[in-house]
Image (cartoon, rainbow, N blue to C red; front, side, top):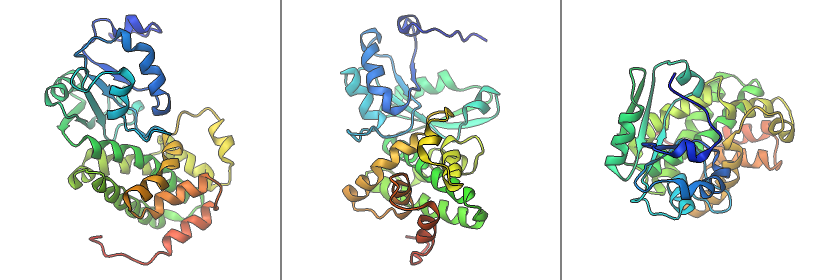
Length: 279
């Protein structure tokens, strides 16, 4: 009840204890550069946008300081992520997330600001793991939606999501993340929500692709930003850069680039030689 909307950045930022940045990743640099002169030094930036910037390949923990032209110690970045549909938060339904930062005090302050009786915030220091999981789960959700759109059933969808989750773990750990992060709220928790939850925009994109709708029509339908579409464009590059095989995630990129059909891509992945469960 104490919230008040404004379109004036100066009014919004004045006296704030933390700046919550929820602008889509691909628009973040421009938006932050426009307000950097208004932001007091020492104010933590809470990043809730999930994705990787096209062109630069930057995560939010790198994009924000560079856009503000300040180092992380001046305005520490705290990444908040986890299974958290905005609508359910607004309805005050129980939600648990993590706050990830290299700066423990900044994370602790954000935890105090955001925690309530229905919103639980844990602190972790694995920023890379939290960000990579948050970005790539959107790509995986498109794959899960494609399965549903094709009518392949829960068996196929669960297998695809399980394999895709392993791929996210492989890539994240190759980039320096902790494996246990991928088993937590910002990893498995967010993956489950986004891949199987009906409110997921990325999953909805996949469902419509699986049903045969053209990608341009889906993106122009005004149903919100699906960051997974943009992140998928970087998956092949990340796979090559870190020498990690990502057949499920790269298949989404091939579908979006019109290099293969959704049905063909799914069955190609399901036909791959089985790997040991510990792989």
